[in-house]
Image: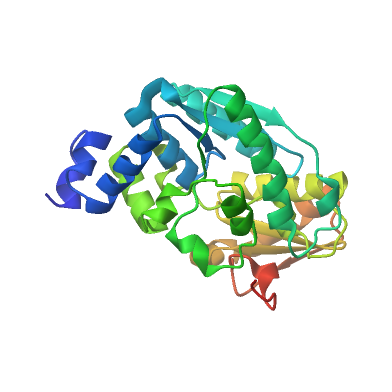
Length: 284
């Protein structure tokens, strides 16, 4: 049966696993865990993973979300709404900015994930859950991701990556399962908007979050606002660049971001690039 036929039907995890070899492989892996806690952001990958896990494991699967200052409030709200919509058990953990990443070091992601996933594991174990998983997928190996080392050290499972499942496949299967996140743009924590070596302060994070929220409200969904001291550098998907090349809209955006606190507002003509601050960073 082709994808087109699937789109007109009500699909479940069980119907998809009969049609896609890699999907079935993922199901078998998740079933082998028996109990599972999923580090949940509300993004495409973790939403797909927790939905499949809950369909397979029922109440033995739980979503755990870290509520940290470098996570946008609207992302936390969307994560909460999704688990409520799908009837998924959901635990929020309040955390601060770890002192180790206060100056946004190059290995920030490693240091942060070490702290965050240690905390998630501790809370999961209190609930009798010994297995924690994240939503890393096969495409996540294409960028500088020092945090992957932390996951390995803490024995965090990455079933999507282990089954060689790509982002496109996750979106395709999410659409078949009628998950509203199937076409949600990829996001990352607000720390990625600051150059390495830049002190992380609450005001900078507030400005970035407010600027991105404003642009999303203007229907510019896939967006990053990189903060270079007092300047905002806006990155959007190349496909959306024509939308922003409107004199009136550009003036409104500049005015809004200056009101937020930026002195200068620029548009990156290359468009959004995953991990643009990682250029020149040597992978280890």
